[in-house]
Length: 77
Image 1 (cartoon, rainbow, N blue to C red):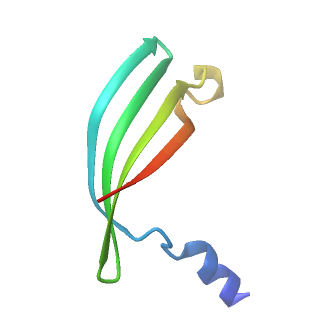
Image 2: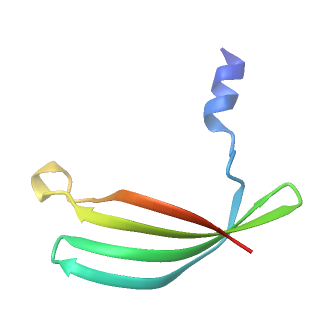
């Protein structure tokens, strides 16, 4: 059980060092396309990514939060 607990809580993607929004495009009032640059560190290795995703607003009756969908990740040098 302890091994499973550790598996669920470990940071396999590394520690987030940097998160920068590169571009936002408002498609409609409840829909936006976002491109971000992310830098992560896992042990001594640094990894850079560019994520493009869609944010869709959930109706207020259901919580009113923004849902991430259509995620595309690119590894950057």
